[in-house]
Image (cartoon, rainbow, N blue to C red; front, side):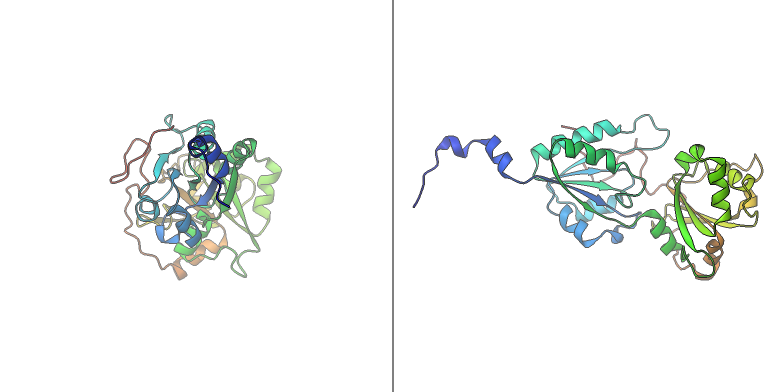
Length: 291
């Protein structure tokens, strides 16, 4: 039996918005190399109507994989930069976009759940009963490990691995610093490029081996990847301040000595920034303003 619908029903936009399932996809974009994006992530980006992008997302991912009709919103953050987008602004934008578009992609550098603010965003979408899915990505530690040829838990070199953040090093107790030096684990430090000399000295004062090798991997997996080799004692001096490119990942432990044996990736060794600073505009990409 055919039932005629009135024009009023057809034009009821609020009803249609409620009828369509609206989903935010939290997607890990990987550490830099656009070819490391997962197949699932690429499929979602190809149909997303709105994409909310971090600074540490390869511009090639936006050019190659994002739906050409999609609205792209840049919500970049950069340490010590006053023009960074606040977390509350990002939360509000996600909620607003979910009300406007059925498929919204929240594209984060690396993996979605490792040293990201995804929990804050999940709380916001949960409070508004917005459907979501989480699509993992390759985290910077895995990318740097692969592109330096350094297995983080190589047998005979390390019994485990710890992911740590330089942003919170001041909150680590003396006892915890001591534990870090006593366990035969590889340490991988995120977001530590500015703070590394201080972190290194805290490890030394806690009893770490001065001859412990380490790698500072700038812009890992990108064409501009650059690897610095050090021993921990190189940072013993108060004057050993070295400026590293952001982002940098720091691999500390016996496994770092394997770099010379297994290194395979030859980038351009270019010291320029692969990820554009907040004040620069990416060529060929138009960003939309917050709604």
